[in-house]
Image 1: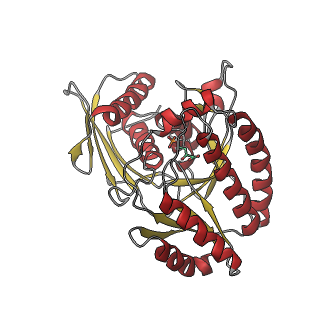
Image 2: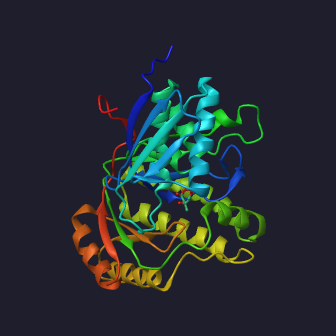
Length: 335
Ligand code: PMV
């Protein structure tokens, strides 16, 4: 039914969660403990080309022209194995990925990476190209990638873990908003390499943090309030909910045994500057993921002012302004 010429190129953008995904209910299927909600960005796209090579014995996987090795390569090959199993194919592939995130920026590229790979590999191997199917598939590579299949705002459903249709039940879909196109000012702080992978940190948090269950429960309420705030296009409400949800997530990690701490001294300096902006009457709200970088939600008209203040707070860092961006897509004719 699905035709394929064995080669496809796709592009996808990163997303930043306003309601976080933190903790799995099923490690193998990558089912999250809670629903999450994000904004896909219009900067830092990832472009991935997948080309089937009938005679090859191994997959060839490169990032920015250099061969991927170790765990990073293993994850891509495991993902391709899943695609091959579904496609009934044993053909190996050449997978070439180009990221535009500044090197060493420490910004999550797994979301854009696995969303682009899901779209390109599905086309190359002739799998279903329905966005829901692509979102479920991208989820298996990296949970947050399920959301980057869609543009603007997306919600990823935790689904029905443990049930027969568990795999089918967890996917992202677009979220309806009112008139709402904020900016996210991304402060890349200089703070060295990440100590713990998000995968390992999530597991430790769920297994050992006494704050995990309370956060997961309150995140449910945050999500319901967030949907309302988005419908109203109420930036202050969206920002307040996003900020408390993120700080709560980091609190669960700080209470894990041993603690996982991604927030560094420069992170706190940026958080102080966000508080100062609010005191000065500029609506600005912060969110942080599995790293020290800070993403500041604000009105588009205030983005340059916010960026300047944040830049002043972290002289060694770099600051980027993003808006809502597009979903993952095939580059037709460019395969
Ligand atoms: O990128 P992943 O699937 O390992 O998950 C990371 C989760 C956070 O970025 C910390 C939060 C989120 O919802 O994106």
